[in-house]
Each structure stands twice: as structure tokens, then as C-alpha cells.
Image (cartoon, rainbow, N blue to C red; front, top):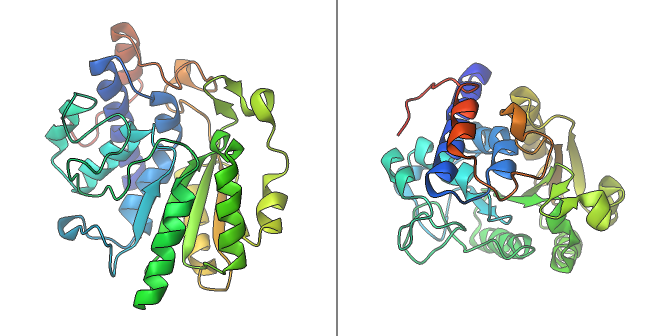
Length: 282
């Protein structure tokens, strides 16, 4: 297990990457990226069994990850680069036309670590189920992970996939829901209230793991570790993690204002002043 302090230091650097990447091109989605930084850091640096130097699309004998809420590529690209999937310097090319680091994940340019184009919300769970079933057919005992936004759960395809995974006992699948209560048009309660998510996922045949504070690194690691121990027992597992959109930068926290708005130059300086450089900027 990676030391919690080391993971926290990585997360701080990832947050620096997020605000710098989005500021540089005046576009992107920093809010959800900042909120999911602990999850992504814990997953890629501690929980998943994977080898960045030996990436292959089929993912045999390796854990796999699918980002369904594909707009939060700033956090995904930063964590992937810091973990060794591609050079950290390449983060400078974020959202530049024709590069490998497009605004939403793309398979067109062969970026290591990316197995599906995503960002058309609702599709990632279906793809992950296919990958998980393929592993079962191949006798591969590694796991498949996904991340989804709570606003994404307003998509009907999510629930079709959830019903299928529960009915077919896809128990090598761990989905995580970012429950930050925010989406681009307001709060999830204002747009389309989600109700009792724990009861809903359990009704679809899933084992539910709660994480009361997904921005606390130890809680995040503990929740994902528990989810791993519950896999392989006849049910898919879902982690419901409560996070705060924009976490780590005080003026970006708890609001959907920065869901899809990059920090200005002045705001960037204010953000960086709150985030110590820990691994070195690109």
C-alpha cells in the first residue's frame, strides 16, 4: 500500500496540473476534476493492478479503467502522466487540436491508457460490463473499474446496464459514482433529483460501498480497498463517494460555476498559491 501522505502529495500536484492545463487553453472542466482527484490518485497509484509501460488495448492480466464522465480529462490525463503512461511534458498539449490529449478521451491517436472515447454520458458502464465479461471468458481474474458523475445517472442507459450487470452477476466490476450534487445546469436536486441511490443500486442487485468523504485520501483508499474485497462474490460493486466540486481551491469549491469554466490568469495565481508544488510542474 502506498503511504497516505505520498498519495496526498501526488494529489496536490495533480490539482496544480488541472488548473494550469485548463487555464492555458481557457477551456476544459476543472470543477469535477478537482473533486475527483483523491479517487483518481488512489486508484492509479495504489488500488489498480496495472503496468503503464506494458499498456495494451485488450487489457489482459491487468485491471482496466473506463472514464464514463469523459469531460473530466484534466484529472485523468494528469494522473496518467504522473503514473507513467506518457511524458508529463505532454500535458502542455491539453485540448490543442490534433494532439493526443483531447478534451474528451479519444482512441484516435493511440494514447496509452485510453480504451474508449467517452463523454457522451451514460455509455461507460455498458462498455465496462463488456470488458468485465470478456475477462471472465478469458479466465482473467483482474478487475474493471469505472467512474461516473451523479448527474450522469439521469441517463437511462446507466440503469439498463446496472440491471444487466446485477442480473448476470458481473462481479469483477467496480463502479464509482461521484456524488457531488452538482451538474452544469445547477444542482442535481434542481435538475432531476436522484433519490436514494443506495437503495436503487441495491435493488438492481449491486453491493454498495459508501465513502462519506471522497476528498479524504484515507477514506477513499479504504472504500476502494473494501470494494476490492467484496468483488468476486456474485454481485457487481458500486462505490458511492461524496465529494465537493472544485475541492482544494477555496473559490472553486461547492459550486457548479467551474464545471466547464477555466480559471482566469488571476484566478490561476490564487489557486496555485493554495497548492504547493510537490512533484515538479511540467
